[in-house]
Length: 219
Image 1 (cartoon, one colour):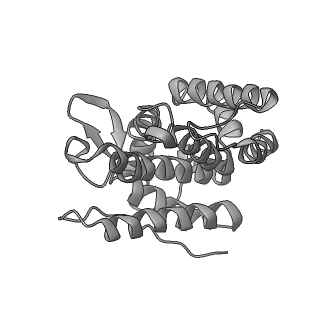
Image 2 (image 1 turned 120 degrees about the vertical axis):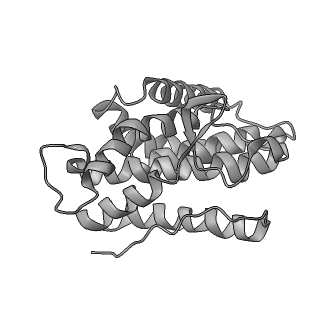
């Protein structure tokens, strides 16, 4: 079993290097959770510690995010990197943990620790909002990086097992499932037509092929 701990936090002051380190840790944790065996206890603690950090938007309280600062104070590119990106990674981590340990959300299963009722509440009340928050900008990157960002985000979710998760738990967040399916279909159509290029003419056919293979494998 691989040991893993959630260390997510929000710095009191804007610090780009610190933001990068926090997002980098989430990326590393997702890789670990996808590629290693994680105990039920560690999965429970990680999900609990991460989900209780999620915050709703004031004007859209049904959506939750793991953004590192106020999105209204961020430039558009930083908003993608440090508001949406950690939200994508956090949601992908919970997706993977639930697929590995479905008993996390099963109220009939005793996890044997004092915060399990609060974890179930977070999974029921906050996690759907976190998935909804992921749909805020259609999974796309900023500006000329829109396509690259879309492919990267879809790869993150596919690696976590989003196709399998959506099939098993379609009711948790239908909006997320719909957007993911539509986005994969868009990439598949573009790959078949050979039109996956950004405004500079950079071709993303290879990245699309890798994504589609991963998505198909995780059904």
